[in-house]
Amino acid sequence: MKTYQGACHCGAVRFEVTLDPDESVVCDCSLCSKKGGIINRVAEDRFRLLTPIDELSVYQFNKKIAKHYFCPTCGIYTFHRPRTAPELWGVNVRCLEGVDISAISTTQVHGSKLD
Image (cartoon, rainbow, N blue to C red; front, top):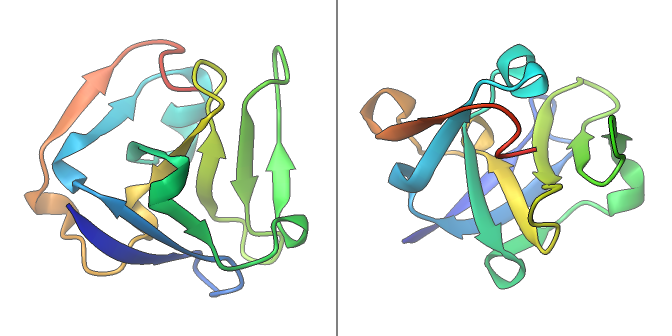
């Protein structure tokens, strides 16, 4: 595992996360397939938000348990709190500096397993 710096496109949303990129998944649910994220779930102690959370926008749907955070300026989805595991952070690996997306191994998951 390694600690990575993460950010949205414009840099307004910044965070640090410790993870193994090869433990990432691609979900085909209605939201994930449209936002195109590669998700890696981490425990609270492996995620550190550097931008105040009230400066982010949040999207919720269906049961309104999951919280999908994105930058209000550039619109990039950075991370979320999953419905099925709200104690974890689901990080968009595409937002991490120094991760070669073409070199990581991902698992495909189906439906709402990661919302």
